Image 1 (cartoon, rainbow, N blue to C red):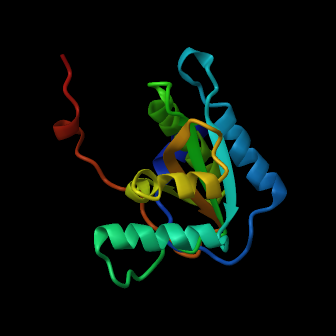
Image 2 (cartoon, one colour):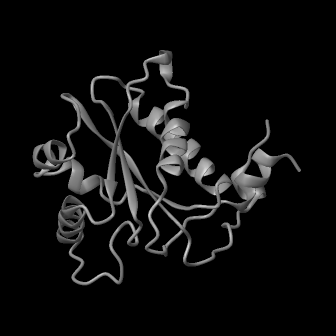
Image 3 (cartoon, rainbow, N blue to C red):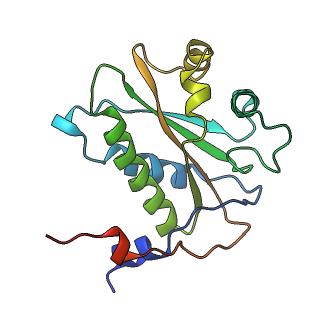
Length: 176
């Protein structure tokens, strides 16, 4: 089987990481994969904010997410203690930014899998990033003016193994 298809088949969400940080080379490969993603009208409007897993703003996001969801003590934070988190934002005036961010995050997830790294695509902080503290979090994450959160992804070395999800092609595909 072709390498790309094999990588797609093997990729799953990682919910447990070692404390080993990514190398600068690994991080650069992942960021380049995101930057190389196609964007509508080739606008290239995406912005990538890179954080270490110990960055204090991540815990503030966790607290706000939990407050909004009325969760008192989750077993893990939203990025499962990954050593690196990348927040992807896009120009709020460009209607295709959310779609472009989704394409970029998938490129990055597949690149991580191809490097043997774990990854977790993160949407659960959307309410925190778009709620009453939107300006605060946007400023803390240094999002460019008029940009807003679209999606995030955690990266690290896998501490747990997980099988890729199953699916029901008969129920999910309609051929006309």
